[in-house]
Amino acid sequence: MSKKYLLLVVDGIVNLALGILLVLFPAQLMVSLDLPKVETYFYVNILGAVLFGIGLALLLEYFTGKIGITGLGIGGAIAINFCGGGALVYWLLFGDLNLSPGGTIFLWGIAIVVLGVGLVELVTKSWKTEK
Image (cartoon, rainbow, N blue to C red; front, side):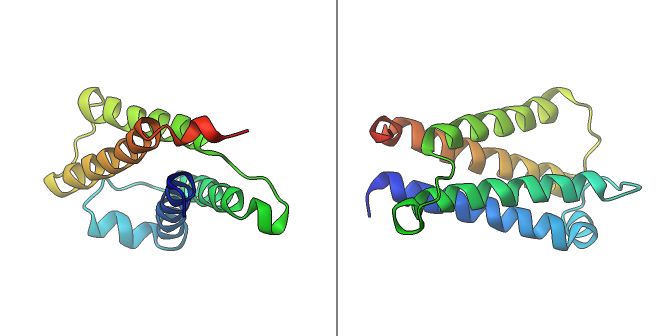
């Protein structure tokens, strides 16, 4: 498997997993990670659905030749990872979120993973082979 396809699969699986957790277990996830309480899980579920869709699009790109459906390529994945990770870092640094230590550690972990995957995708130049 080429580095491009390996990165598509890894990025896709990470997004699918986060999406599933946020859609199916928002209350349990927020409590167990010590994140701020919310009145409704609407935004948590929407974020989960968007992440799930991105993961699906990445995996569709991987299977493009086999099923004939084009998904999201590495270039799009890099953009999404840097935008999402960058926004999260901004909020963690400047947002006055009043997070518990556990919530802070979890969110910084997510930011590092998302930005890290984007950086690996960028520096491996796997996006150069896209057509």
